[in-house]
Length: 107
Image 1 (cartoon, one colour):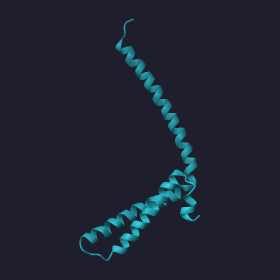
Image 2 (cartoon, helix red, strand yellow):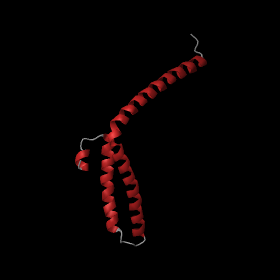
Image 3 (tube, helix red, strand yellow):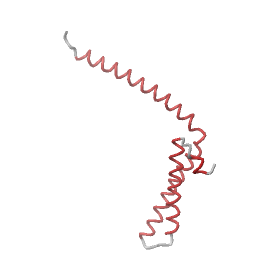
Image 4 (cartoon, rainbow, N blue to C red):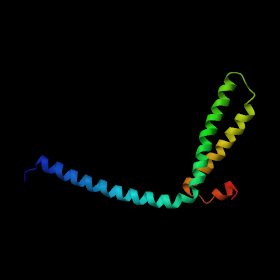
């Protein structure tokens, strides 16, 4: 039997196309599953995401001023850093659908 390069390429492309189509369908089904599961938590996830972003900006601002010798925001920076730990925990637990989330958020 003679192996033809064109046949090998064609069979490889057909196999790859089938694999891509299978992964695409599986990915869409998986995404829809997660979309439905996370809808009740979407507002919490968005809010904690914004909180993290603004908190990191604030923390950096405080740190910059402290490097310049202004220590008046030392307590603010500590408070923001503590808030970031809390928001990060809520953000991650909400994305995981954790059963401990209500205990952490007090709901």
